[in-house]
Structure formats: C-alpha cells, structure tokens
Image 1 (tube, one colour):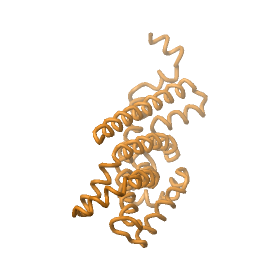
Image 2 (cartoon, rainbow, N blue to C red):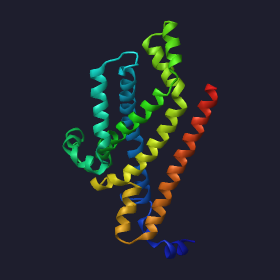
Image 3 (tube, rainbow, N blue to C red):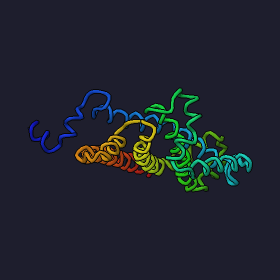
Image 4 (cartoon, rainbow, N blue to C red):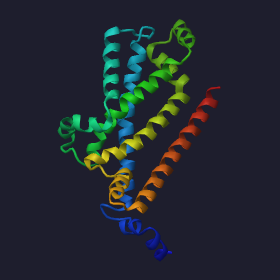
Length: 231
C-alpha cells in the first residue's frame, strides 16, 4: 500500500504528517486561522450589524450620525480586496502582533475582512424581521434588550445560514493569506502547484472541499433545527 502511494502520490507522501511543513501542520494552520478569525470577525460584524439596525431611521434608537459612520466603515472595509488589505494594514498588524508573517498575523486582516461582509449579511437578516412583532413588543413595554433578543431569535435561522456562507468564504481567504506566509492548506496547494507537484494540489484541494462541505452540512442542519424550533 505504501509503495503504491509513493508511486501514485510521491510528493504527498514525502511531505509526511509531522514537522513544520507536514500535513498536520498545514491542516492545523487552516483550522487555527478559520476558527479565531471567525470568532473575532464574527463578533465585530455582529456588533456593527446591531448598530446599523438600532440606529436606522426605523430602529429603536435612531441616530443618523452613528448610522452614517457605521455604514461607511462597513462599506469601505468591504470594498477593499483582501489581498490589498493584507498590505494596507500591515503596520497595524505589526503593532498588535509584533510581526506581519505567520498564521497569527493573518488573523488581523482575516478578521477585518470578514467582519464587514458578515455585518451586511446579518443586517439584511435582522432587517427582514417582521416589524409588527417589534412594535407589539414595544407596546407591551419591552425594553431595548428584550427587543434585541426578539431580533436575534426571529432571524436566528437566517443568521446561521449567512454565518455558514461567511465561514466558507473565510476558508477561501485563508488560502490568500499565504501571501504573508500564513501557511495552511491553501498555501500548500499554491506553493506546490507553482512547483508542478500536482498530487499535493489534488490532495490539498480535496481536504479543503471536505472541510467546506462539512461546514455547509453543519450549517444547514442547524438552520433547519432552529427554523423548526421557531415554527
């Protein structure tokens, strides 16, 4: 079996599983970047989405100045291509991380790139909530915290769906983060592809596809579960 693998996938076998450039390290770096940037970028995006909903004209605390500022911040960062953002914010990355290279340094641009995308997606999901339910809650004397809870509860299935889309997009961004030496499966595929070691390209791509399909399946399951729970 080993001899057959060495013959069919020689570069895949030669990479090995251990060491700084083995498969385990590559897989770990992808999970590391995806997980932590999803948390940081997701929280930041959720905060901006809530600010946009709350301060909009029909929000519970309308404020044109804050809405305009939050809207412009989200729009500007969403408009910057990720590969450019990597270098634009490199001084900021170096300031807080101490370096602009590696998987940890990649968390900064990854988080700042995914946050505005997620903010817009969640904003749309929250905006779709039946405003009649919000008015009814206000009429019953619900405070702002209770109303925010209604927004989240009513839009939870859609928030899970857009979170799934965002997470899949983030996995793709980790590949581009290889431009700053972040590592990961995407970087492995690109690096070995440039060296015409296509067996590594095929296996690395297959691993990324499995990860994406797994995220999609979990997201779909949770969305259906919460949707049934609300019905």
